[in-house]
Structures are given as C-alpha cells and as structure tokens.
Length: 374
Image (cartoon, rainbow, N blue to C red; front, side, top):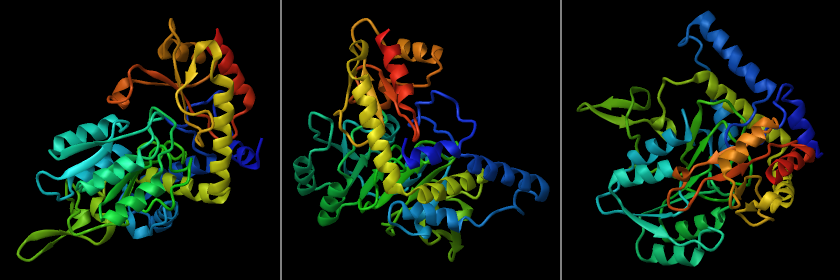
C-alpha cells in the first residue's frame, strides 16, 4: 500500500471495513470529526452567533485546489444548492444558448430546463468524453455558456477540462465546471473555469451538509438566485447590491460546523499532496477495473486505464445492480447503485458504482469480484 493509502487509513481509525463508496459519501478523518464536534460544543457554550469562526484558512485551502483565491469561495449546503445559486442568479438574456453534454447530472438538467435558456447538446465520443471539435463548432455557432461535469456520477470518465477551458476562454464564453466527483480525486488546477461547483462529502472526505462555489470569473451580471442580507448591502435609493466576491452567494445561516470540517478536510488533502493522492487513486481505479471487469459477466463501462477511481459496472443478463449491491452488503461491502435519474440522457439502466477510497486493500476488491461472480 502506498504512503498516501497508509496515511489515509491511519487518520480514519474507525472507518467501516469494505467501504467502496467514496463517490457517494466518503469517510471523514478523526481530525475532521473532532473539528466539527468541537465547534458544535463551542456554539452550545457561547451561542451560535458568538461562535462564528473566521473561515479564511478554509476558503484559501479550497481555492488553492483550483488555482483561485479565498475571496472567490462561497460555502453552501451542497453541490446542487451551489449550482442552483450560481445559475439561478446569472443574468443571461432570454434566448441565451447553453452548451451541455448528454452525460450531465440529472438535477443540473432540471435546473437548466426551468431557467428557460436554449439548450444545445454538445457531442461526445464513444466513451462519453466531450468531443473537442464539436465544442469548437458550438462555440463558433454562438454559445453563451458551457457547463461540464468533470466526472459524472454514473461513469468514471475524466472530461478534458483544461482543453475545454482553453477553448471557452479563447471564444470569450463562460465555463462552469462541476467538480463534485473530481476535486480530491483528479487534477482540477489548470481548467481555468469561470466557476467551480463542488461538495464536501465525496473525494475530499469532509462532512455532509457542506458544498461550495468557487467563482474566479465573477462578472457584474452574476448574483445569487436568492439574495440574502449577509451577501448584499442596501444602497440609495434602496436597491440591494451584492458584496464583492463570492460572498454574495452565501447565507449567514448554515451548518457552520460542517463548513469548518470541509476546511479541515481540504487542508488534510494538501498535507497528503494532491498529486500523490491523484496518482494513488488512479492506480486503485485501474486495479479495480482489472479485477472486476468480466467477473460474473459484469462489464466496466469506462476504459480500463481511465485515470479515476470511480468505476461503473453494467450488469449481465439475469443480474441487476440492485441485486449485486445487496449481495455485496451481505458480504460487508458497501457499493452504490446509480439510478438512471442521475444521468437521464445517458443511462439506459442502473449501474453498479464502485469507488474505493485511498488505502483500500486489494483483498477488498477481490472479495467484491467474488460476490459479482456468485
């Protein structure tokens, strides 16, 4: 096991054995847990508002993972809430054209359709990777915004974020990158996105109830979908104006302890060395695909050498993802079933998702292969 894997496991003294669902809800470290509990105690002792912390260090740790600054970070309760806050308040005129791929997350698709923009589906290749020539053509035809999930919830294919960012910047088109499944797992720096939407509980291994929005490309036309007093000021003649930076998207109410925990998790990620974590997880993903592809007729949906640890498996005739997950649970293995609603334009049937956190022993993956073959 690599040094990263050993350090990860050592920091999670009571992590459940057989946990293979980092892409759903990862296991926070002892230090993250202690930080969350300590702040809850402080709120009880001092009162919630008297215990409000300075989150500058947490913002800086998150921002550095994408190459941004602390003023670009807003905390929200989830990635979905962050996407809704970002897109819902973006002042695009009627008829604006928004590019997306068929692999886009279901809740983002629902939001886009409700906003009333003209949606332009961008082409993908046989692995569901965005076709860059197709993106060039879309930009040339007049897109106003491009939205991409760096990794989908339902398939471990890493989208070419840096290349997408370069094309969008050259065309002068804003680019939103959903990093819910990528930040903490693969490299995000260098994407050059206008905004990043993410969550705490997955590959960063922070607590539930915290998400974030990082907006290094803030423009005057961008505001929160639901303006709050904490993120706005009243100016003459009585019109609210957003405060500088991403704070405009943030509510003063929220799970403050969870935000602290997310900041601690981001700091821990820096200590482990993001590049080393990315390499370790890519190796875990390749190992998992090699062991699981073909077991009991199950087939891996992404390329076997894809540099991610998010592994999805399509069932053979006579088996289902739900039945396989139940068999895995009986063997004390935690995996996830991804329903078609997660990617309604791309998934034809539910898939089994296996996402080993750092430090996962190969024996755990071998045990899952035996379950699938049973």
